[in-house]
Length: 285
Length: 276
Image (cartoon, rainbow over all chains, first blue to last red; front, side, top):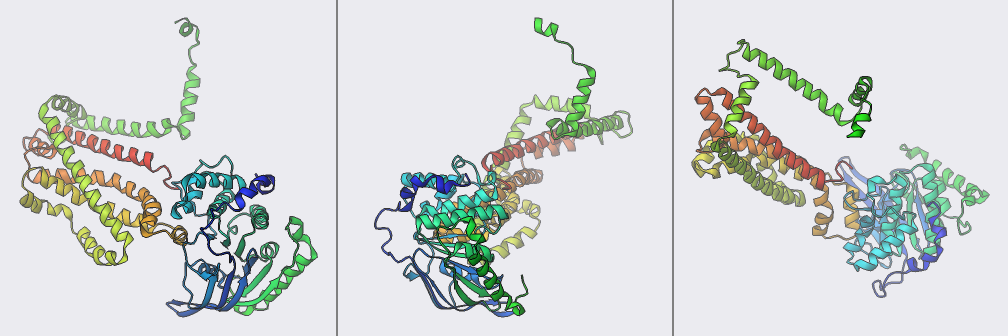
């Protein structure tokens, strides 16, 4: 179950591109954030959640946004998902203005957000209902994906019968069921225990490498960001600004040993020092 | 037969130990035995107080007298007729009250503007003691079954309304964000998220509402009716047939219990994910 991704390599082909031709005209799987500002009006006046953020994520690239609470990393992700409008600037996802309800963009939250009245399989099928995908192939794909994330045999269970890690696996299957080209992930494993998180991150790396999706990943864990990413966008809070964008240059496929490589440790220390340099404004973490 | 004969009689000790073990645990014995004992003690004291003459039987008839009276009226057709009338009033009133409350609550939960316009007057209506409306309903709808139905509906309306709204408001922001990120329409969001998510709260309120509906029907019957358990109760009391009055009271409690039980059963069957 833990190593589900590697064992079922034969299924990867089927999972890779299950989408019928023509549903996604665009072959642009990149994200581009240009000069983005986000200001919230609160009772205490205006708060700059994000200021002048500019970065991009190329097709099939894995990019992390890392920084302490209040640095605006989640806000940027929500803007990319079209859930929050930007105050200023331009955000393009897959060549189009960011907006919700796109099959080629999938979002995953910190909480698994499984609906308790639906079985695990029915939860995974939710996006296919909204996107009006054909029922029979959708179900086939959902079962395949549950197998893929290591939940074979749990499809008829209800969410509360699953552990936290398994719930997040189901959530991962749900985001993959509509076969998105771009994944937006908002601290997806941060509520899980250390071991489960590490394991799921390892599997996420494998999924990214084998399925070749573009991933924008938000986290406050520097190690996690370095381990997973091609590039790490380092952010500071109050106001939320990008400090630097770090190219990791670590070899793929990513294996657990990567965590012990000197280059990884160097990067983690480098990013940590970047963030500590701004400690004066950072009082939350 | 032979088997029963050869089986050793269970040792007294074992039975006691087993019973004690069950009483301590979460088994049904632990749940059933203590309240039964309490009830029996209360009935015993009551029986003693009444039949010993400490309290006049006219004021407080003994449980055994009530049981006698019960046995008598259960044989009478007027009793069953009254029970049927009251049940009908309570159930139809319940259905109407719940339906209107559910629709209104759903609209209030779905549409902010509608909620702003409608919710304050509804709350004002709730603050008014609705039992006081009974005489008005009597003049509006007459002595027949309608005024009782309207009263029952009015009185059980509010808890359902409030719980429908609370149930919809209690849906997690993440779940709403998920639906929005998928591009779900308002109807899809309602159908696939808000409705099922609000069902546990709605069903919880139904158990309260069914009991309230019965109260509404009885109160309206007190004020003016020709049939029903409220009428029966009033007539027995006027005739100082207190044992019979108590018997009707017991029957009313049983009726309430049955209705509540049906609501609770439906809830446990339909809302299998409650509290998850």
